[in-house]
Amino acid sequence: MNVNMNKKAVLFGVGILLVLAAILTAGCVDADTSKQPGVELVIISSGMQVNSLVLGQADCTINWQPNVAAAEVSGVGKVISYSQDLPRNDGKSWKDHPCCVFGANEEALKNRDLTVALTALLMKANQYINEHPDKAAADVANWIYGNTDPVFGNISVKGTDITSASIPTIHFTTEVTDKWRDDVYTFIQIYRSNGSLIGTLKATSRKETEAIIYDQGIYQASKEVAASGVYPTLKPTDEIKIGYLLSDHDAPLFVLIKEWEYFKENGNTYLKPDVEKYGQIERAEFYVNGKKICDVSFVQGTAGTNLTTMMQTNSIQYAVAGLTPFLSSIDTRKGLKILAPVMTEGSALITPRDAPINNWEELIAWAKKRSADGNPLLIAIPEANTIQDLMLRYALATEGLGVKMKGA
Image (tube, rainbow, N blue to C red; front, side, top):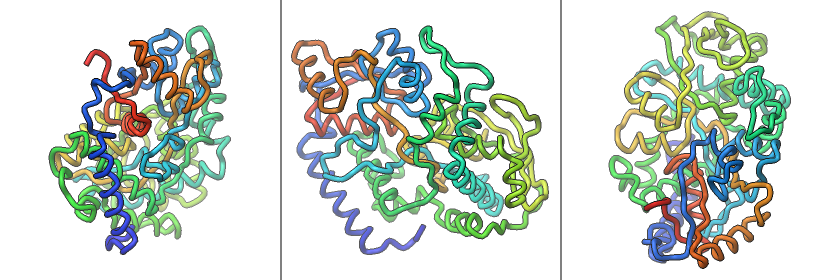
């Protein structure tokens, strides 16, 4: 990633500010929408959202993979809109929008060569997924579902059927493009508009913001290592801990461990599990250039905010987590850095299979009618201020619909 912002990026940043200023003035993002026709949001954890549709606890849910695919494969739900297709009132596209990223805390950043090697290996894992999607889908199903078949309501489905449907909807990439950076800054502006950034990132310029949230030096060095296959020479060090969520957005990490022999044969830098088994792996050994460098523990988090909190307390040193939890944590306490994207897109708005709508336009008409009848549409979100929550609110505001939390 280029530290010096080029003229194009500067002009785009100014444009984003002007667009968002217009949005805020028009009341589209930050207005008091409590008296406007709209929808109600309810928080239902990501893993419970498919069953919430079975139980009639929500009219729609917005969720990340593989839960979207689980709803479809089980026959419980249908996709109304993928996240990248949601509307924006600035005329731009959400294609390849940011989602999960790989990041590190201050302690990890002290060992820059190890961090570069680990980040480069994650980049190689993304390449593996794109070249071997079927094998990656099987590895992810192995990690998430083990050797059991998940059940939704009274419907049992194969884990591999779910991940085979979900993997193609996710763009696995560690490439920091101009558009990716632009969209990250758009999310920061939306965050600011709703009062969610109150600290370090509250009023920084784009250049200042990017200097705070990214470690561009590690990113560039990792890209060079991944491209050349020449890893730094490292000395053995203490154990490191990597946090993750039980989602196929974290597929590169799962693939690295399940396919460790492939990476040994193709680069001699790999994560060897201490025990090979179905399901989650708790511990592995990190080898760089065929030499053991350290032990690694994998810590499953409950949410992105849970992972970034653990990073701040040094309970873990690295994590694959959502962009917005990283931004919130960096805003309140310096030290965390985003090293690279892990994937983009990978989320969708879903309804029960028998819902009387089939696309975004019909959902908006349904929401307006329901609101006029005094029975607002109820949409489940996995957590407040996630990418999914922000994008949904932005899209509904674009349509002139207000949003409030249920019971607020």
